[in-house]
Amino acid sequence: MNRAIKYIDWNLIEYNEAWTKQEELFNNSIAEKLNNRITDNYLIFCEHPHVYTLGKSGDEHNLLLNYIQLQAKDATFVKTNRGGDITYHGPGQLVGYPIFDLANFNVGLKQYIFNIEEAIIKTLSYYNIISTRLDGATGVWLDVGLPTCRKICAIGVRSSRYVTMHGFALNVNTDLTYFNHINPCGFIDKGVTSMQKELQHEVDMDELKIQLRKNILELFGE
Image 1 (cartoon, helix red, strand yellow):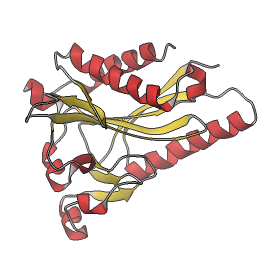
Image 2 (tube, helix red, strand yellow):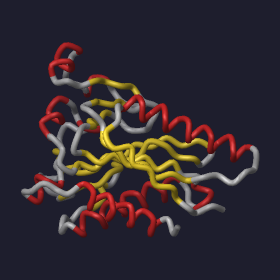
Image 3 (cartoon, rainbow, N blue to C red):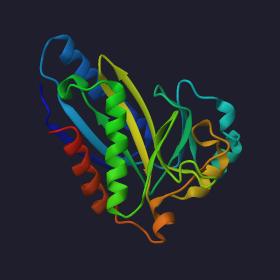
Image 4 (cartoon, rainbow, N blue to C red):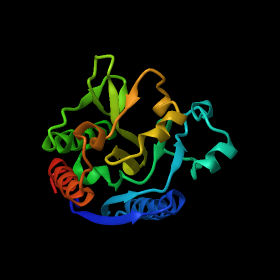
């Protein structure tokens, strides 16, 4: 078992380019696994230009813009092979793509998602933002059980042979107006928020990456 995690920062990268690079690492890990070789684990952080992405089980009707309106918003629309419904990615949002062979960590997919959520909850706590899970929905939420319940981090994962790809999107200094044009993750009765909105000031992205990376490494016991 190889518990080492290689860290990569792609900074600002087009969604489709990142997806292609992910697929290469993902397919390579599966090939190595099928040949009984040691597999590598990658933790990739990045940001994307404005894009709406739809999961394989998602409903296109949850995108409330047509093609012309998308262009006016300088945004694109991509159908993906991850789980989950529709979400938005854009500058100021920290996107994480863990490409892990879960066999290396002796965890299943359910525990993997729990660990990612836990790492984000611990990171938000460092900034004095209290967050938790919402039953029946992946991701990280604030004010669960209250009318003000709102999502701060979306999670959508694909896995094959216990190798993962895609991942999470944490709203840091995100322009939340872009969420007005979708039903985020298929929900029509819950809001979204960002760290910047909760704290009333911009968050240092580099410091945040250090904290989140540390918490992910601790939870997966590198």
